[in-house]
Length: 218
Image (cartoon, rainbow, N blue to C red; front, side, top):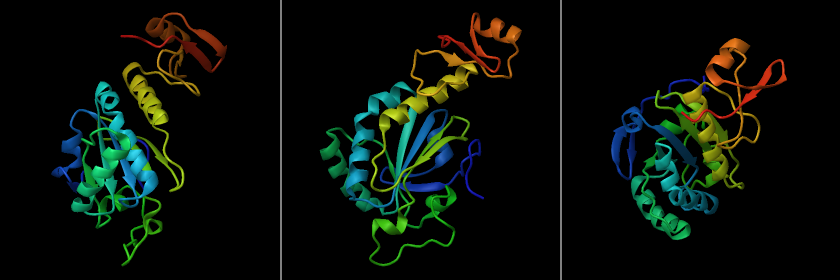
C-alpha cells in the first residue's frame, strides 16, 4: 500500500550530506517538504534545487524545513551542491538524502518494491522519483505532487499550497481554486450557519454548500 494523504510518514533513518538522523526527529515541530530527484547532476533537477536554495527565507518565514532526496551517494551530493549553488546563486543549506539503496523511494511509493539500480543506470531508471511531499508537524502527509523529468516544478505553487495548508490547519477553513494569502476562504460544510457566524462573523452564501468569508487574521 502506498503512502496516502493523512498517513504518517515512515520514521526512516536517513543518511544525508549533513549527517544521519531519523526523519521524525529532523521534522520536530516544524512543517517539512521533501523534494525527490532521480539522479544527481541532471539539468532540470539542478535548476529546481537552485530555486529551493533561493527560497530559504520563504521556508523559514513559514516555519518549514526542506530536505532533498536523490538516489545517489553522499559524496555525489556534496559535489552536486556546488553546481546547485552556481545555478541558484544561493547557498544550498538544506540536507540531501542519499537514497542509493532506494529505501526512502520505495517507502514513499515512488518506486516499486522490486526496483533496483542497474549498472550504468540513467535517470530513466528512477524517473518516478520526481515528487514533492508536504508534511505537517504531526508527521502526516498533507500533499504530494509528482512531475515528469522534462517539466520543472513551479515553486510559486509549492509555496501557495503550503500557505493554504497552513491556513487550513490553523483556522479550520478551506481554500478555493487559485487562492492566495489574503483572499477570501471557504467555510467547511461541517459548520452550520449559526456555528459559522459565531466563528467567522459575516460570510457570503454563494450556494447552500459554498460559503465564503475573509481569511481569519488571528
